[in-house]
Length: 111
Length: 115
Image (cartoon, rainbow over all chains, first blue to last red; front, side, top):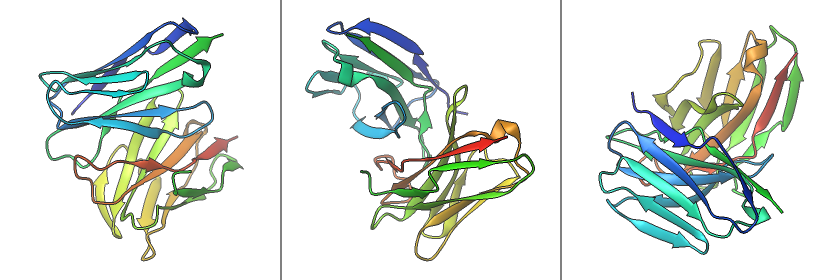
């Protein structure tokens, strides 16, 4: 079945440093979504990427979808303590109704 | 606030018992998804219902069952509970039945502790 690998599992940064999490799928994806889960909270939808090579920005967050539609990344510039949380990618492939979630990357920002 | 509600927020019970978790989707959403989140397994998809019918099944144990009622709320029943069932259980809802571009809106979750 489809597998979505996400690395790293944890990332410690000093406030102001950049952060990147990577998502790789074993199969070609129809789209990929990114979610953020704050400590003690629930996953919250951030963005969706659909097109090959697509790049989208939300303030300090940059999301990329690979040309082959099998990988994606989320980059945060100049992290802030409010960025703390776990970032999940979720990809759908073929005719599946169900997104496959990566295990998430937990971002810890030290002030 | 996602508009998805889940009750109860916390549940503590003993091994061998049975519990029911409840989810109400966002107004207008027809699909409900159930997920289990534990520390070592991430978000595991359990089951999806669309407009009252089971649409997709994931890694759901035979001891677990779910249903979606005519008013579209859903219940997840967990029976013969084991210590390993302790986890956060989330439900999520979408407008449609699971098209590639559907966005999932998650509820606040139910934290189940089995002692």
